[in-house]
Image (cartoon, rainbow, N blue to C red; front, side, top):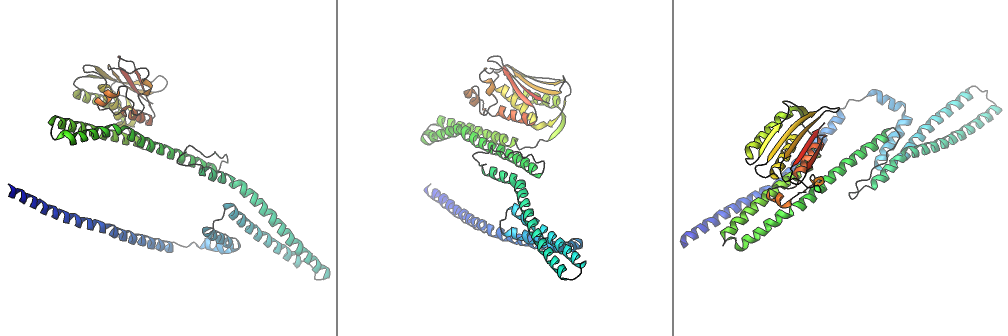
Length: 435
């Protein structure tokens, strides 16, 4: 037996050595892969850049724009110079506008002055008094051009400041928005132009960011809160196994079953939390279907599986609705599951579909049971996350306290509402209303 054990150990070590060598080879190959991928990525980027330059060079030239550019070179050249300078030096928009407007006005007033003086000089007789008059005219025109330029520049500066003041307010307000406080919003600018549209878009973006951030915070908070119990149970039974599991088969079986049960519970909680986090970002796949038909089939499936309860369905032959069928059935299944969990064996569960047309058309799906019921104090909290009327019973039946929260989120995403009526000992009725 000793020789056989030695041979087994030797073969195991040899096999382990071979496996180790294979793992080392795989590790080397894997470690070499990033370099290969990096080189390939760099090469691809170079090719894309070269292709971009080729396309830019191959773009057809527009002769009309070229002619206009050089025809008004006294305006276009300064604008191009300022544009290129602005790419290298940080210049406020008001300064750019001021410089461009001043240059344009200066060119125009100078051209007008030269044209006016030339026209006057062409119609005067040469002489002493005429020369003095032209000299005074030139001085006066130069002074007036300078004064007009200064006045124009001042007016442009004031107008630019007033027009760009909302942008400065937006910038200052954005500085106040942090991850600790995402509730800040920009003040609506009543200018009926692009600035007002920009403000609305930024506020909508902040609403989406705050909603996404809140979902992430809720997910982390809920996960850390609810997973503490199963993790503690698994750790406790793992320690129990380490101490006495090898010697006592009953403890071994109990610990294995508890670990399996709590692992399943953790998986279910994580799946439900992920679904709850995705609901706000999911897009519905709307289709037109017969609500009574699909709900009736679901109730029939439950009737086969839940042998200890009496499940019934009632409703008209056809109610057509347009919504996401899978999500709606998910919420209905949640209500039926909840009714089965809290209704003793032999109890009755009825599912009813109704079409109401008194004024506003609406469709209702009601799930009524003869279970233990819900107290008046607990009824407003049944749709809260992780709330259970009887936590011990909820753990026993595998409930996580998220089912009704998910159902409520689904129904509200569809534009409907969900409500509950109940009293202790008289069962409960949960109703989904779709408009």
